[in-house]
Image 1: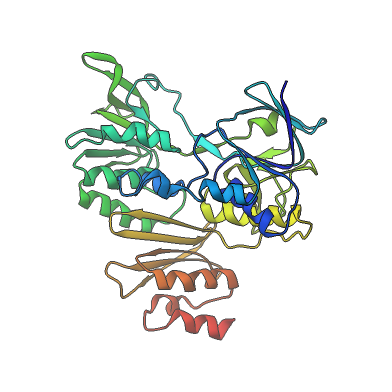
Image 2: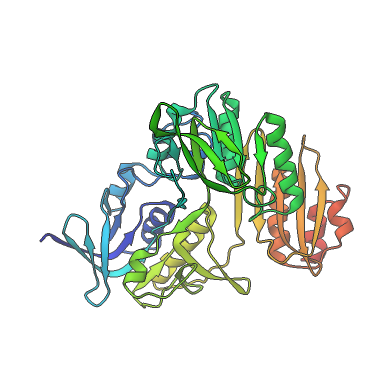
Length: 413
């Protein structure tokens, strides 16, 4: 049995794991660092997968966060195509899929998540795709042929981003969404209505308040999908299907090892789990923020939690302190969102000077708690600061483009 060991072992080769490894070195960590990944590629950016990479506008090399030389220079051990099958906390070691074991001083779980699958009749048919990794895009892209009929199950960010790419390629695109509006989990009704209208104007068909009961085979090829069966009895012809129904956090290692779980691996404001020698960061981690526990799926959150974990491992712990933010590119629309709008009691729309641009501010008891900015880059920068300062702001000032957002910061800082 081959055995290895590192002072810090990071499980997960995504943005969070990669960022942590380099932040450790930047903070002066001199011990050994190992980064174990189930994927064969070096850590890469995932957001472009459903946008520029799917469209063929950038290459795999352009997706990479850092090149091979960077890991070698930083003396970060890179272990690709390695699955971790068990976490043995008492022995402080991992069991790997090839039968070897890997010991650790401190362990960081950056295991991310996987696309939510649908346990429905016909779900195993060929031609049904998900999107999370480079191989997913490589498998889907050949089907993006003009005239093909694409049905997307799910009207969240990924579903809408893929729809924007596909309809521009000449596919007939339909989105089936169980909720009464697109982006229902993350945006207010005004933004949802705007994006629904944008997609419909581009030729995308939206079927809201509609569930999926299963998938039918293609006539003449029973192994391939040919239709989507909706819960209202409608049968949608399909040459391909994308299931974009959300993310399931990868918590199996943590669960089997007896770590505390919530909607993810439960951690505190320092990304520490219920085991003093184990931390968790990124899409798999549930943590306290703003008086509630959340799990955030975003690159900025991954980077912030990597910073927090590195500070802990380097002996100078600094708690999570960032305001969450997100982005999405669809057509010529750049959406930048900041804050979490849970519990808002008012929406304020502010027009901006850029073509088609506007901001939706979300208020709770007079305080700005979140904002969605469409084609409004400069306003987004101020919106981040308004959310961070958490002060009472007059709704009329927010809505009036003649009142500079900068002035609201200056007078209420």
